[in-house]
Image (cartoon, rainbow, N blue to C red; front, side, top):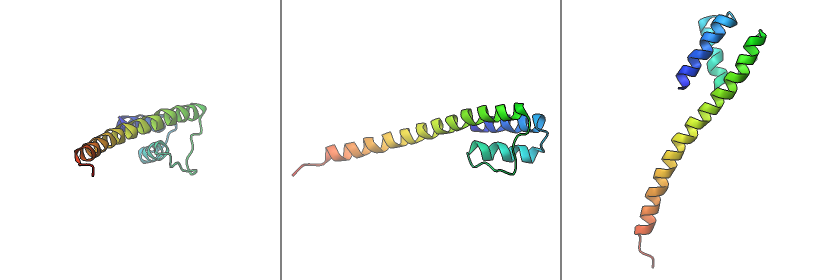
Length: 91
């Protein structure tokens, strides 16, 4: 899903902002990962609006995926820990 979002951003910046493929990819990845760079900014109003929505959707999606993956991992670890604690005899 993240790769699709990066591809959408890259295509948008290439066609609507007129940037090169590498600049478009760089911008899409750097802004989606919230690193950002002041050396490149969208100049058109459409580009600015797209970037705002792109960041809201992209960062939210990335956080959702991270929470989902970490949540499953944490749940598994806590279950295993609970089984160890319950299995031990209390003195």
